[in-house]
Length: 116
Image (cartoon, rainbow, N blue to C red; front, side):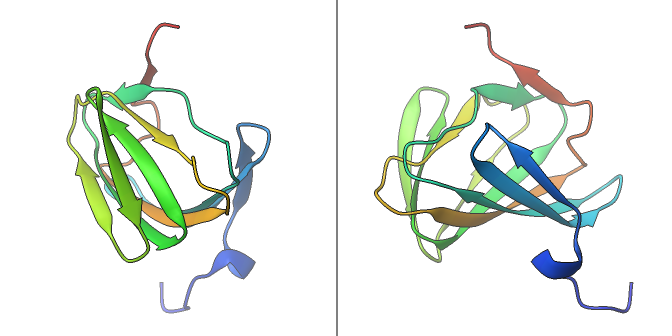
């Protein structure tokens, strides 16, 4: 694609009732998604059998729990989640967290939620 991509021209979706995502790049072998998560929100703990992911914080402070260990990730920091690793993104801060999640291959059909 020869046109710059942004929130304004990318498909939007909502998740977790209060979170937003924008699919900046969505191909079979790579996705780049920008997401915004308000204070107190979190995704459900899950894993991907095939996809490797990289979470990169643009604004705010996130908590990423990976295999039972919590990692604080702040602005301009990132963390990798390998295939098969159970993980959960949480916003325990008092401000919104905006971040990129880059996945290879794409995660469509490869998300497996942990049992409650």
